[in-house]
Length: 340
Ligand code: HEM
Image (cartoon, rainbow, N blue to C red):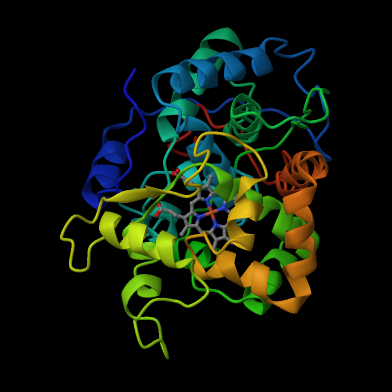
């Protein structure tokens, strides 16, 4: 099993892959209403354990797997709701899919979802939605990386149905930029029913994973109004380290840097320690620690890691319930990369 590659999606590959996929037969289901914990208890009792096992296997080969899965859920849920629309490949009818939107070019983890789906189709054909796999996998990733929900199991409701719409422009509009300020971030999270507090809490996911230099180079060399070109809110030693890792004019677009330089694979509250110390990569992250609207909540998480763990588990479940579809508008995709 190969690791989850950091890099930018090649548009031609996505289009080719979708064209090569075999035609699959639609199987109907009826369910109207919201999500519930244990939705598959009767229809596919092994659903959750199959996803967990798959995530574990990928994680044992590549410890950046939880980061990929958490970001995948975030980017799925913010566009058309949590409906696995991000997984859809391009087709001749719809070449401008979510995957092509700029913030999605570096999203990873599709192989994990495909792996779980293949096993689920073998065990319980046409039963478990791709949207539920994305949500369960993100939950499993967070737990594997060490999220401690006060020793209790972190439940994730299921019963999402898969969407049929994938739009590049919708993704570009809904997904926040690493250069956003607090007002812009608050508006984008608010549009999805998430509070400012949940936004600050969920941003703590930047305690794992990696980022491409291009997303923060402006803070190292071209920061407006700075004589040195360095964002003055960045810790000076950290900025110098980053300049070594991301040299100006570096032709390698795929160079990545740990989001949390101290414990890059552990779901802890270190993101907030980093922010407090001027050691977060994005302007959008730094804004949470400097804007008076979010500063207090952000700083509180520095001292109270236990509470952040708890809040993160709750906020993750909240994010995973954004605009969930039921059988009247969705389907159970048989292959997560194409509609039935
Ligand atoms: C607040 C607004 C947010 C912005 C502007 C933002 C932006 C970004 C950017 C630019 C990257 C780097 C991507 C790359 O260069 O490959 C990134 C990585 C990441 N983001 Fe966010 N993000 C936000 C919120 C979130 C949320 C809510 C979550 C999940 C709950 C999340 C989870 C992650 C993870 C885990 C990574 C590392 C991914 C990897 O290693 O592949 N982010 N984010």
